[in-house]
Length: 377
Image (cartoon, rainbow, N blue to C red; front, side):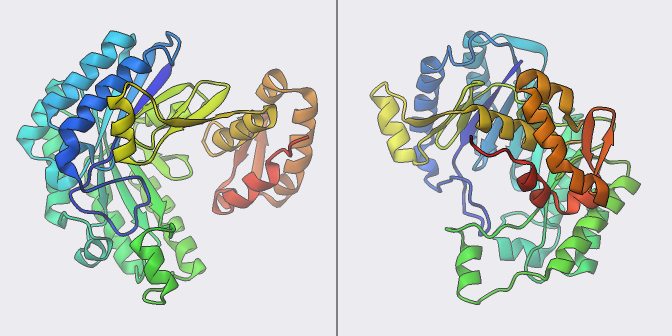
């Protein structure tokens, strides 16, 4: 099974923390859609007849698209690819775009999962991040989604924000847990170069919160989500009633995927490629009937390291038998040796042939993954 990611680069205004490729040139939407349909035709064979199990509209802000425009994209994709009967179709959205009418139309054209970018319920945080919505709109968006017939609703939160106190984070979590969502993604703020947050940090106009506070906020997230019936199935992702993100799980399980739109990435099992992260050049190339991307052929070591990083971050863990089958006995033995230190310290645990992060290990997962990486021979 393969996946398709569509990057919709438009935002009505730019959030100060976000480093995904985006533009406020929403007037270019008609030309973007025309170019996207050309790209679908040009990339029709990329997945090599692999059945498609997930389609994900990300951004940017995909909810700037009309349901009719999303319908046309899905219909066109269906001409090139065979969709599975249980295909997951996710649309990322801002809360203030999600009227009941919009959501009902979105459901009718084939979307069956929403990822709502709430990030915070607090006015101070929302203003600091330059988010458009209010707390009331965030709450209403989930209620509207439920009323429109969406049974699979994910919400996003951010912690580690400047001046985010433990009490305010607890209020955020308490509000989130009360919503009838089935999935939660929560990410620590990262100061990416090129964002306003990064600029202000370097100018001394804001401060990162202390590391101890970041750890405490993550621990609170794990505790409160578990108490609310969420399963912690990946470092930053939580699900109720096994409502795992099929699309993200496909990434973590190494499945092939096609990326469409500016900056979108693709993976065919032997190489990675990424479209140019520039709307003007993306449009110009496709108007000339050409694709504009860079490509990297993956070495055996690249593939092994991708396998390690994507598997161990999930609740399903890293199966050493698969390392031996897909790579080599030598790779398995080297990995077992690298993992010993963390197994002894309790950061990793082993059940049969499968290695898992413990709760303690999740807290230092970056360090562990770095230690397990194979070196190019």
